[in-house]
Amino acid sequence: MAETNKKQGTPEIEETLSKNEAFVLKYKNYIIGAVAVLLLCIVGYFLVKNSTAEKFQKDSTEMAKAQEYFSQAVISGDADLFNKALNGDSIHSGFLAVAGNSGKAGNVASLYAGICQARLGNYEEAAKLIEKFDGDDEMVSPAALGALGNIKASLNQLDEAVELLKKAAAKADNNALSPQFLIQAAQILESQGKKEEALKLYEKIRDDYQEWTRNNAIENFIERAK
Image 1 (cartoon, rainbow, N blue to C red):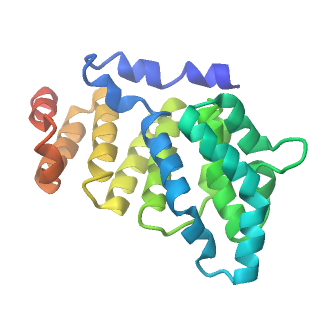
Image 2: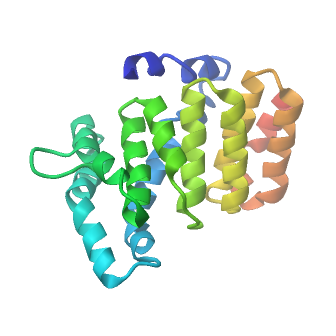
């Protein structure tokens, strides 16, 4: 499964771009990696929200070892650690087992499991898991949408990828994430020959996220799309 999926999506898109621009479309690494880091930073808050102290303790304990493996995997990039975080070891459950539960733990575990699957190259499984995630956190939710958009692009489901990335940008509405989502969406549109739609997104980046554009050559993208 992983080997088949890796051959779809990303190579076709990146071949249409110049070498100095292709870094923006490293789907499984940039946005998916960003979600992984965000999860490490704020998952405690996400679990405790609307949870009793007893339930929070239970949820946290249930995922503790998987989170430990996940943290090590994010730092090292070790696929074996992502696999252990996903599937567990001989003693501890992984995120997949917890993802089947109801409540906050199961919800967050679905996102964790989806990121693990994506980092292992299992994009179809990753998409199914992340689609189960339901959250309203102002950082994790748009990043999760962006990760899902990147996964869809890796599956060559480009129209859906564009819509997810645009939705992620609108939901984030900040200079840190929104321009990255929009520029990815625009480049996918360019790869499809939809230059007018791509141009509108590039111009939106220039007009709405001026702080970001000061350090990035957005005019070059605009001129190319024209």
